[in-house]
Amino acid sequence: MSNQEILVQMREKRSKCIVYTRVMGYHRPVESFNIGKKGEHGERKQFLE
Image (spheres, rainbow, N blue to C red):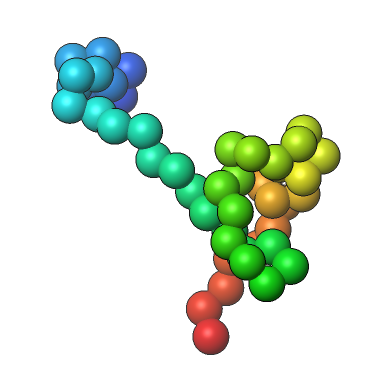
């Protein structure tokens, strides 16, 4: 079964995930960013301390 078929089959069970990130000392949802800030967020590198 392909990923697309699984997504279609489980559509009712899925829920929207809101991603928050820390900006200038406080947390904001990424979906509220403008186009440029969303692109910048996508280019960030993830690391472990």
